[in-house]
Length: 138
Image (cartoon, rainbow, N blue to C red):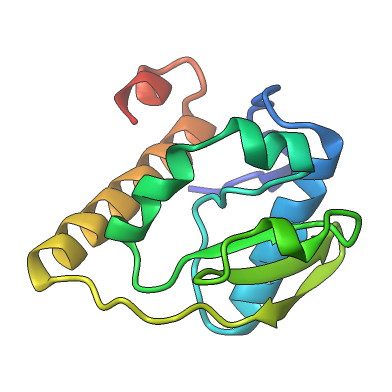
C-alpha cells in the first residue's frame, strides 16, 4: 500500500496565533534535536497569554520538568523561577533556563506515557481518515 504524503495534511486548529505556532514549531525542533518526541507543546506567546492562563499550574504533576516556551519578545522575568524556559521562533529554539527535576511516580509516568501514545496514534489516524471520529476521542 502506497502512501502519498502530499494528501496527508495536519488539520488547521485555528486556536493558535501565528506567533504561538512558530514557538511550537521551533520548540518541537529543539526537543527533537535532544532526542525527545513531541505530540504538542503548551506555549505562551505574550504576557497577556501567560497571565490569562492559569491551568499550567496543574502541569507539574504530570511531568518531570516543567518548561515554558516563548518568544524573545516576552520578558523572562514573568515566568516562575522554579520552571525552565525555552525561547523559540519558527526555525528553532534554545534552552534559556533549565527546569528543576520533579520525578513522577511510576504509576503517573505509565499513565502519561499511555496518554501520549494514544494521542499520537489518534492524530496519525485522523490524518489517514479526517472524517472519522478521532478528534472527539482525545
